[in-house]
Image (cartoon, rainbow, N blue to C red; front, top):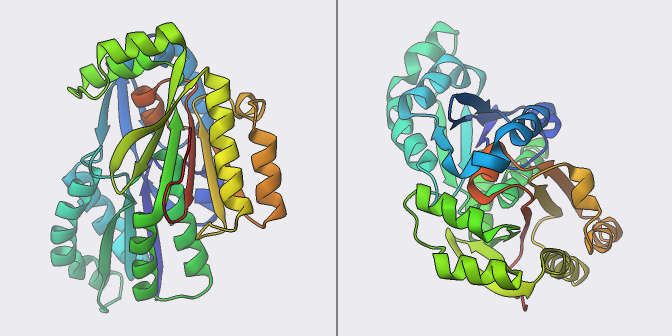
Amino acid sequence: MRIGLVVDSACDLPLDYLEQHNVDVLPITVRIGEAVLADRRNEQATLEFLHAHVAERGHEAQTTPYTVQQIQDLFLSRLVIDYDYVFCMTITKTRSPIFDNAQQASFAILSDYKAARSAAGNNTPFALRVVDSQNLFAAQGIGAVEAVRLREAGEGAPKIRARLEHLALHTQGYMVPPDLYYLRNRARTKGDRSVSFISAALGSALDIKPVLHCNRGETAPVAKIKGFEPAVEKLFEHAAQRVEAGELLTPTMCLSYGGELEDMRKLPGYERLRHACANNNIELFESVMSLTGMVNVGKGAVVVGFAAEGQKFHG
């Protein structure tokens, strides 16, 4: 069985990894004023756009995911021909309509695929599963990497499906945003009142940075730490401790950063986490945060994702 894998562009994994393993990307279009970029995980294009626009006006950005029709067209023009079963893994549906769009498109795809496959000389059935990662950014990468690993090990669709759904429940995503004012302004633009003016002003005045945690689609602060670098160091140490304790459910750790990766690697705690992963056979993925992610959480944000039971973070 030919198994295809699809993610959206908010999934923070390196583009060369996605291309090497034939993982298709559903792009998200970002518009800031007159500037428009289709976010396709191209790190250089993302950084150029970041330096030109995001720092100043990113909170005003409009992000547009693939529509139901665009997803339907992509599948019927190519994916139903190239594969027999496709897993489409999306950002949490609590933060984006991509899951719902893909789910709605799947009904038409499964109804209409036969003509396209028949024209390609294939009369066997096609199947599609849309999987809500229930997480964001770097943490989305955990399920995608596991799907690649299982596919390459020759596992069938039922086992991959069960594994992805299990991991979605136990993937832990953490983020340290550098600028609460930006986060508040962005939230207001989107009609999200989760970051109040008072908390943003107080946090900025005292240089308090939250460590935000996402699991099962729910996001909340798990710690408030004075200073951006101390907050990041605490987060990296937490991830390293979970690696060293042997608690990860997959041999994967994903990091993403809203800027140049060399800047992330200079942050305190990074080297400890890198060594912990190397010493415990955990593959460490590092990527520039998607443009979609950066316009939503701000330049310079750090995100860590891994799979383990319980979040256990103590600030």
